[in-house]
Image 1 (cartoon, rainbow, N blue to C red):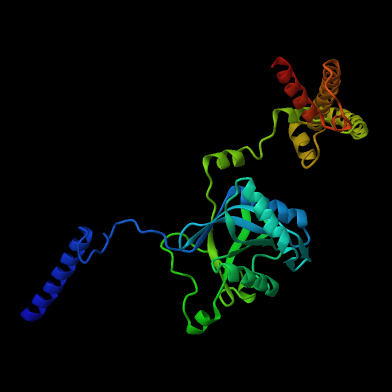
Image 2: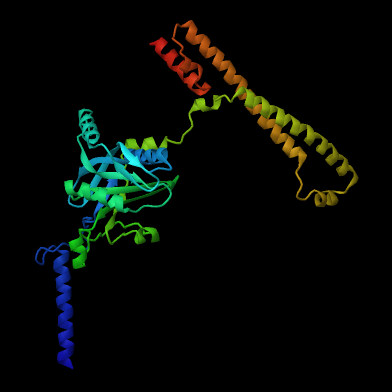
Length: 357
């Protein structure tokens, strides 16, 4: 019994000494237990501009699929960075899309190099309008062509219909080598110690996810300028308050509101007469669930006055803007005549600044 206790205590001492050696950096050069570990997961970093271009291109093509090329760089053995994208000629239907002009792709790539885009093609993207992110048989064939050129190419799928503000339905894929699949090995290069994969949908699993292809982690890296651009994307300009509505539409809206106010006036008169005949408690009980004509009248008056004041101010600004442009011999084209008031106000402000210079 004493020999057994002595053996156990010796094992615990050995484990303790091993941990101490690791924490001090010794023990055959092993890293410290608390040392930061590098992320060795396969991932793709998509810039904000590239993501916006993908979504805009995908929404413009609804209900058909669209596709394009991704430009970027291979940072290391695990990370791919997508900086920009561009569309290309294609034949698309509601369920498939194929590129039709390889010469255009090369010519576009050469022209982008002249503008300072020295990045290489890191893969391609296409849209699945309304039916999730996965690869069809045609998509797998297209991805095979890209992986022949570079086995690290990535296929990105975006759903412009299911994507809403604050949530983008997007995923990235690579094909699984059949030989690796037959050997039962993990197709990814290694597992990740940080980050995570998207939870696969039932549709993607049925369509061959983790059988014919696997997905990658998508990270959205933004610099300070991109962060400012995204923060200002939904802000209303100061000149938007001067936007004019169509004259005929505005007139009909005024007539409709006045007719409603005329009916509400009669209802309000009946409301007052009922108040004089009933007690406060009876009045509260009898008006439950009914429209209060006084509140509705006040709301209609405020909205009507606001819209008419804005319409009058916008019309006055239009007149002053055109007078200023003509007085200062600034050419006014038909395009200017069709611009909304908010743009005309901005044109006049720019013209004043140029005149001062």
